[in-house]
Image 1 (cartoon, rainbow, N blue to C red):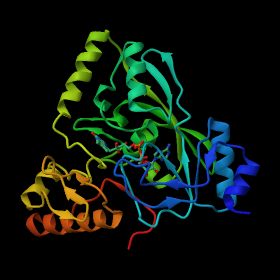
Image 2 (image 1 turned 30 degrees about the vertical axis):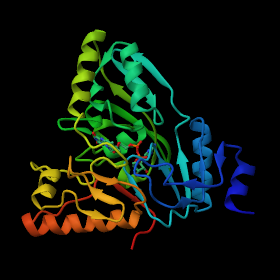
Image 3 (image 1 turned 90 degrees about the vertical axis):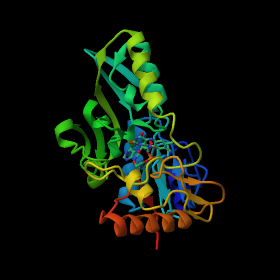
Image 4 (image 1 turned 180 degrees about the vertical axis):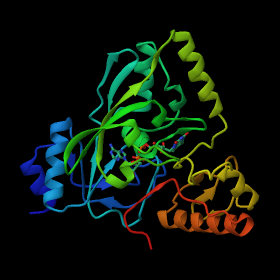
Length: 298
Ligand SMILES: Cc1cc2nc3c(=O)[nH]c(=O)nc-3n(C[C@H](O)[C@H](O)[C@H](O)COP(=O)(O)OP(=O)(O)OC[C@H]3O[C@@H](n4cnc5c(N)ncnc54)[C@H](O)[C@@H]3O)c2cc1C
């Protein structure tokens, strides 16, 4: 029996025997995983997690696939997608609890409906709450770590509530990059506000995004070094418009790589390496990727 057959017999969790990263990522490239499971609640997630750990089967929690680059050879393991876990509850005093699979769009609609302000800066990011917390995503001056009161995470020791101070939110980093726990959800600290104020803020943050490149991308590829914009460094290094295969450095925003059609993950990896060398030669700055690599790259 294959792993997939064992899992689907033991744990009747909704899933599929194959998972294609190209079809399930915003950049649109990458190979396949051995399968995907979509647990509907914490108990299903916990059972699957324990099974994977006891059988030593590699797995990867995945959100909307908006900041990943999966190898063209895919990943020798299973994807765990929490998109069916998408409850949100208002707890009072400006605090809400949301499951990891909640999308930015649903979070933002819930906040408007319940007159809550504080997460408008997320509008336009094509992400789930789990991915946002893992990456400490946000925009200049505003990050999810600023509004996360605590995070619920599942690891070998069971389920734990991680207070904000222990989440080690940093410049596109969090403690979950080390612990490799599955983020199940979080309490977010917001504040009551009139709807028109929330809408004004939403429109302001959406308008800041209007010049971002359109098309298949992973958002920003590199973390901004302290006090400098990675995009500006890449532009100064003359890399705007540089192309390898179907992958091209955006003319609009040099920190974006676009898949203009038929790009492979290897094309993108080579382009990233060329950008890093060009920036290093020009400025001595070693750019660090924000995107998360999945599977083996040579
Ligand atoms: C057009 C575009 C615009 C973007 N704009 C922004 C922006 O303004 N600011 C910004 O910060 N980012 C931006 N991004 C990048 C991306 O949306 C964010 O990094 C986002 O947080 C990723 O969320 P996701 O749900 O897609 O995570 P994924 O890409 O699916 O996963 C990212 C990482 O998080 C891990 N992960 C996901 N869910 C869980 C979980 N439940 N438990 C544990 N680990 C998990 C994955 O294993 C992976 O390592 C943009 C991307 C695109 C394509």
